[in-house]
Structure formats: structure tokens, C-alpha cells
Image (cartoon, rainbow over all chains, first blue to last red; front, side, top):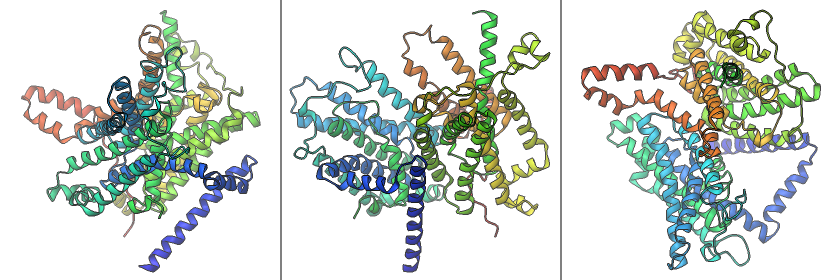
Length: 295
Length: 332
């Protein structure tokens, strides 16, 4: 067992060295100094408190997306549509904010409603990919990718069409929301502790769902052997749909965070590629929830 | 619209489908052997950029096309090594490569953004090009379009009418049986994945040196083409002729969208740009829905006459992948 682990570790170290080697080669090919680049990456991430806060700003959506993907990976699904689910989460959050823009409700309630709205938006988009997969036989990779492109186009349509800024529509996005709609930030840094808390709740929820519940066990059974799970009486297609919905809701929460805590409006690249990045993270951590948080 | 404009438009459809044809045939060969090359979207972008850069720097357009093929073959080699030798998930490797190659193309291609470069010229074939209707339609293209016509025919011939082609079908459907018949399954998978990759790599320069000459980075509008080509491969049922039909249909619909744009002014331009993707989902739905359980049950409940018609329609559209697609082969 221990020997096996050491073997794995040396493989992973070799992979890491290979990755650094390839990146260095690419940098050298454009006449950039690799050591300078790595130094800048390190300094830019941990050099100052302000910069470290930026790392956390990226960490929040990435953690939520990865948490969601662990669920779909567990049930044997390649939810590449996660990128679009983040986008739809952001769109739905923006929609809720716009709906309550002139209302007398307390801002805290509106923020909560907006985040729930975002989770619903992401879940609905994931459900589309799920329905295509379960009832139409369309592989979730292609269904999801198609829906990603549609989601991006929808964002741009909304920003330049119905939700455009008064006067001139532009790539800078919709009109920023008033300050009270923003999740409170940490002193003068750009990171909101609330966003961090929500992301941590997301990953802890997924960890216990997969490790500590009967539901998680069945979900993994479906992922390991769909046919056997079906024969054992697990309602397989329902479980596929559940995992799409859970992942979509978490991805939608990531989109909601992008709007409520980072950009305070809808911008064309609202997902910032966190969906695809989350897929990579989920693969890198070998689909184990515990590794998603550095510890 | 005059008859001549329509004819020129249709000839343009045939030419603009050529990158898709190469990509679909390349992917068909690879998947027929049992290996999914999911990196296609990135490979096309990287080979478009690389092919353009090489042709620009060497002032030799043929070298540009060869460079594109080399890039495609190298990416396919990574896919083959990871999935055949290391037995990793083909989907994971391919998907990561798709993203990596795309971003690499944008990063390395920065210096070539919007630079005017070489472009393949049309080469009308004497005599044949003067035939009314057929001449302008088929015989006044550039070389790469002619090659795309020939490639469809040869790929079909190879897969369905030759002995090695039969073996190719074997290693994708029943590798164990092919192995017993003397095929070196894993070696053949390497070969077909790399040859398929080279064809996919030809799709890039077919854009950047011919039908959409130049490199425009993120705004070149090439992102997504690889995914379309992958779904056309499925739509084509892993048959080059049916796949080519899908590619032409796609190019035709794109042209139709362009022609109709001035008429449909109330449709936002984003809708037309993104239209290929819902279309892609819809076609995949059509070719796959016949396999769904609830459809079979619904069919069984239908009256005899209606059931016959529907079952026939579904069967005509339905495609199923090679049985061993994505499954590593181990002799034991």
C-alpha cells in the first residue's frame, strides 16, 4: 500500500516536472525567461495580501464548479456543459437583481434570492443536458458543448439587446448594480468572506454526500457500472438526472458569486472559463473531494 | 437572385465544406479503429495557426499544409500514446488537449494576427471547367477542394472495399477477433489515429491558407468547428460518404443563413452565429433517439401502419458507434 502510494507520488512528481518543462519550452520559444515568469506567478499570487485575495476570488467559483463536477464524475458523466451552467447561473442572478431593482425588500433578502435564482438557473441548464442524455441518447459531452455556445451567445444577446446600458451597449457589460446588492467585501480587498463560506459549504456538502450517504453510494454505483446498478434496482436514470441537477446548482452558485461578489453586473466573459478549469481540477485531483481544498 | 449567383454560392458551399470533410474523415478513421480523438477543436485551431505561420515565413504554401498535417499527427500521437499505451481515458486526454491546443494557438499566433499572408489560388481544370453548370460547380476550385472530393471517395473505398479496411472495421468492432486473425491491434490503432490526426491537421490550413485566409486569433470564428466536425462524424455513422453529406449540408445551411440575413433583419446576429450549435444538438438527437428505450415502447404502442413508417424513419437516421470505441485492447 505504502509502496504503491510512493509509486503514485513519483509519477505525479514526474508529471509535474514534465508540465514545468513544457511550459518553459513554450516560454523560451517566445523569448521569455521561464524563471522570471515563475517568479512573477509566485509574487503575483502570494506577494501581498491584496494579491492573495485575488487568488481567493478565483478560488471561490473554481471550488464550487469542482465540487459540482465531483458529483457528475461520480455518476460516470462528463458534464462539459458546466461552463454554460456557470453562465446561466450568472444570467439568472442578474435577472433576479434586475427584477428587485426598485423594490423595498431588504437587500440581504434580495442577495439570497439572487443566489438561489442563480443556482436554479444553473440547474435548469444542466437539466437540459440531462434530458438530452437520458431521453434523447445525446452524449452529454456534445449536448453540453452545444449548450455552452448557446449560453455565451445568450449573454451577449442580453448585454447588447434587452439589458443594454442606456445609451450605448458595450462589451463592458450591463449597468453595475447598487452597492447594497454586493456581497460584503473583506475590508478593502476584493474578496468577500461570504463567498468563501458559500464555496466551502459547497465542497463540504459534496464530500459528505459522496462519502457519508446512501444516496452517494448509489450514485457511485451508477457511475461504476450502470447496467449492474440498474439490475440491483437503483433507479439509474433518475440518479443521472439528480447528479446533473446538483452539479448545475453548484455551477449556478459559482455564476451567482461572479455577479454578486466580483463583477456586480453581467459581462460577456462572466464565467471566465472556470467551468473548463474546474474540469481540469477535478481530473487532477483524481476525482477525490478531499483534494479539492489545499490542506 | 440570378441563376449565376446561386451557382457561385453553391460552388462556395462545396469549397467551404472542405476543412470539415478532412476533419470528419480523419476522425472517422481514428474512431473506426477504436480511438476517439476529442482534441479536434484545438488541433484545427493550432494547425490553422501553425500552417499559416509556416507558409508566411517560408513563403511556401505547400509547406504550410504539411506543417498543419504534422501538428495534427503529433497531437494524435499524444492521444494514441496516452490512451493505447498508458490506457488513460481518451475523453480526458482529448479534452485537455482540445483546450491546450486552442490556447496555445491563440498565444503563439499573436504575432500573426491580421497579417496578410499567402492564399491558395483557384485552379480551374481546362475543358471540364467549361461545362455548363457542372464546370463552375465542381471544376473551378483550388487544389485543396479537389483533394477533399477525392478524399471522400478514397476513404470510402479503403474502409469498405479493401482488405486492410475490413481489418480496420474489425479492430474497432471486435479487436479480439481481429487479433486472432493476425492484426496487430494496438499498432494499427496508432497508425490510424496518427493518419486520422494528420487529416484533421489538414483542416486547419484549409481554413487559414484557403477559404478564410489569414490568422485572426480569437475572432477568427474557428472555435467550435472541431466540435461540429465531431458531431458530423456521429451523424455520418462513421461512413465517409454520409459524413461528407453532413458536412455539405452544414456548409449549405451556413450559406443559407448568410443569404437570408438581410431578409431576417429582426433576428439578432448572435442568434444566427450560434445557430450551428442547436442544430448540432438536434441532429445528434435525431440519430440517437431511435436507441432510446421510451421510443421503442412508444413505437410498440402505436397502430401497425404508423409504427412501420416511424420505425423506418428512425432506422434510416440512426447510427451506432464502433463497438470497441474508447475501449483499450489487451491481449490475454
